[in-house]
Amino acid sequence: MKQCRIRFFLTTCVVMLFFLSGLISGVVGIKQIARQDLSSKINLSPRNEVMVNCVTGSISTQKRMSIEACESLQQLFSAVVEANAIDPCSEKTRMLKAHFIEVLLDFGLLPRTYSVETIGSLLEPPWQNTDFSPRWSKLLSSRPLDDENNATLLFCSMAGTGWGFVIPPFLLPRPRLLMQWRGFYPDSSVVSIAEMATGRGVIARGTQVGTAFGFIGIGFAFALPGAPAKFGFLGYSLMTSLQAADISWYYANFPPLVMDVSPEDGALEVPVSLSELRFTLNDYDRDTMTYSVVTSPDIGSGSEVNVGNGGYSIPVSGLDGGTTYTWTVTVSDGTDTVENAFTFTTAAVAPVITNPQPANNAQYVSIWRSNMSFDLKDYQGELMDWTVETQPDIGSGAAMGVGDGRYTVAISGLEYLTEYRWFVNATDGTYWTRKIFVFRTTPEGLFVLEPSADTFVGEYSPNTNYGSNGYMVVSDKYGATSNYDDRAMVLFDLSEIPSGSTIISANFSLYYYGYWDTNPVGREITCHRILENWDEMTVTYTSMPDSNPIECASTILPGHFTWVDWDVTAEVDDFINSGVNNYGWMIRDYKSPWGGPNLPQQLYYSSDAVDLHPMLFIEFTPP
Image 1 (cartoon, rainbow, N blue to C red):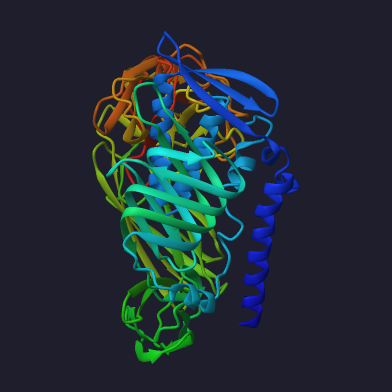
Image 2 (image 1 turned 180 degrees about the horizontal axis):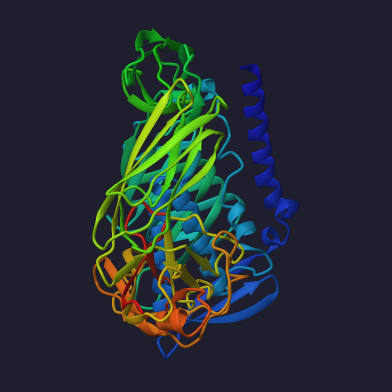
């Protein structure tokens, strides 16, 4: 406890020095950003544009912005404020902050000598992730917080918007000893303030005046002729004082936490000799708790009442090998009840059969398929015997005294539109395993493929690989930052279609299931032949292969989520019969440049999704 108090005190001192040094000398850690003063005024031009006169240090520059751009900036800022009010520490909030900074940089309203990451880091307060001790939380939460018109809160996250102004009128992401805002009109201003140490907070509406001491954040105020002034801000402060016509208070109770579970959640190869489940309970309010633990399948349970923070365990027994168990801890502090479920899987004592090919329940399997295969493993390292049989009979196989590995059985004589079962039996001499797998062949003249590789690349993160993602993004390049070009890439293995076949039709399909920012309905999405080899687990935007700039097919995106198709008959015929190298296709959205923020970014499922994988449907007659 003494160490916690010392750490908290030192953190507070560092934060105060951080703000004061930023106010007095520009603070070395923030370098030029903290030393630059930026002021602006906005004038309306005859062409319905806004001329922004920016002063950075002693240099004056002019920025011309349309009224639509100003409105888009305000809409984006409102989204940031809303997300910050819900959860200032969430990933969504941080992403919106970063995007907002990008837009400000693109409009020339922030210094370009620093990156988005550098400026964004100044929006995260030094104490945001501080481990507030229970003692300090108690001291803060013991203060009276029930005044209907006045509030004083410590270590706050805050966000607000409305008709009024902030002082200074433009808040750069830099420390300020003092920031003040005023909302002028009833029911037109909303400010959310929350104590990060206690979770308590207020929402103030209508006419109000507030002062934040030790503020770090971003904000602005502006007015157009004929309209009242508008303000908005978000950030953090060491202390905020507020007077408002309408204040709603919200009080928080810290719910119990279940921590340090053993076995770890999702653990594999847990010994069947496991004798207990262990966990730690922690309540930052130091409330007494009641807990219960149940398991499924049932290997034991337990419960206690009126316990404090600490470690607990329940006995378990009778575990089976190769089994996944779920154990659920339910704990209550009298106010909040928390239920956490954890899983672990025991080590198999019998041989394990995995990864069948064709996959279990596979559809549209080619009648020219020549083998089936599977992985075999014994976790005790013992040698195994295995057999494979099929029904109807298309082949069989067996082996004795083999170790871990992948094994293949030859098959032949498959017929169209037929369901086949194959049975794999394996033993280590003591324990047996039996697996049954099913697949169905394609109708005559129709060949259906899933990708052998698929991914997408994005200009926004040009060196990031997305080969294991369950989705693919397609987006136009031209946005507020001009670097949102996203392209999907898909490859199908056509080696099972014999050369000389007559390709009647070939349709490439992706399942369109969602979008970001703006509905892309009506946009023309194009399909291009890729001209070079690529690897789905290493390719990035920087290293993506060349593709034909002329599309081979295009489609108009519908107004609902569904399959989207491209006719690639000519390309498949080239791949099968003309000796053209098959490197797959690239999907793009570039025909109608967007030219502003809120890009219509489309989402498609990839082969790593649970279902609705990309498909290639080929109708043909063999030679």
